[in-house]
Image (cartoon, rainbow, N blue to C red; front, side, top):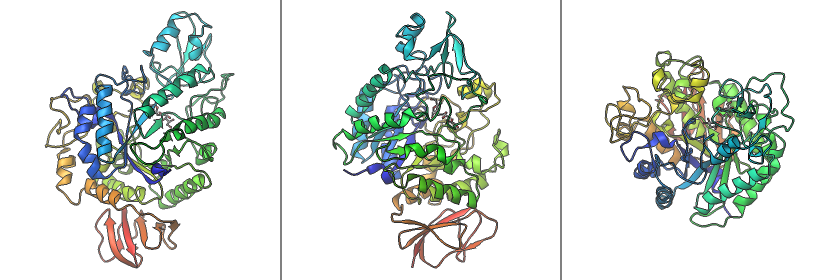
Length: 515
Ligand code: TEU
């Protein structure tokens, strides 16, 4: 059976912020359904929905209160089914987000645990202890919260996100049902949240340095994970071909501080895909990017696991703002948007020319900058709250998409207000404006997705950052101050900026048909 995900382009939808169909200022399935033609014309193979399940939305829906339903703010299960069927009509598959490390404190199982005795089977679904250890939450502050009866429970993220106890067989059994619930509904794949989490060292030892990181630790990259995900792959592979040819997939959100931390997952029979976050974690530097790409390709060799390339998602600063400021910016004034846009466009041609699958986060194809100047009172991310503003959090990349018009809400909603404010001055960044402009970032993404190269990857000698795919395709980037003469070519297929006299200017990428 085909492994359709091997070179797929997957579009990430953050449901609250994609498109609003009912005028309440929050995105939903009805809104996304109306925008399916847009996604089809963009040319993506699949969409991944960030969580849309019933949730208090304390962490944007990554706090799940019911894994097998749709939050009324986003629609109903019938709306979900309608979307899946309509997407199939456009040749687009649907991937849903599974959040197995933790749930919402509003989940009935956690409510039952709180109501039950210490030592009860209800509490054993979670990690309750009489005293906390020194682990820290990734969102800031201690990873333990005390309950009224004196016991503490573990939460690697917000205090409203208790961690499941994966050592209790009832937990994997429950998640197997969740997987089957969505696979039976016809989804083509799963995105697995905090895939390097789940199992904890049963001793729950204090650690010398509790600063949150993604290296192997008593809470991340535990050895149990590899066998566990083999059982999930077997479930995926047990599903027959139906609407689409090929097997079902799962993509793990495995973070590591170093590429080597991901090695255990790249085995025959592992989870089909493991995100490669190293591309966007690498500085805008040719040698560093080249090193990352080489190491990433080596990582996947010999396994049947694919590491999709990523330059943005709902957790990180948008590329325009990341590449457009010398250090992580805290206000819009610190970002050189023109510089950032030039580099983000070059990065897009890199992303879409590399071998394998690529994920594109909504708004990336529009070259949206991060909205850094969101007023404090409007900020929603628990990272901002828990760090008391020391970290701005991730709201700036989650701003509702500008579809049309020249002022807020830019066609996002029929109503007037959006759940997160949009900045002024985005009129030229709307989908409507960019569809009318052949030099827009949207036009670049559409052409790049339509013209993605195939063929063997090889570095092109004599360049800092250039490679071929097969016999007659080359992607050349110039990140340095010196102009780079282009190799002999038959034609320029696509360029991220203006090229004159066959010379590539700084911060520009080009796709070439070679002679
Ligand atoms: O992100 C996981 C996450 O936040 C950490 O793995 C962190 O990003 C990493 O350690 C940084 O180095 C997922 C979701 O994508 C995110 O939106 C959620 O807030 C989080 O899980 C909790 O569910």
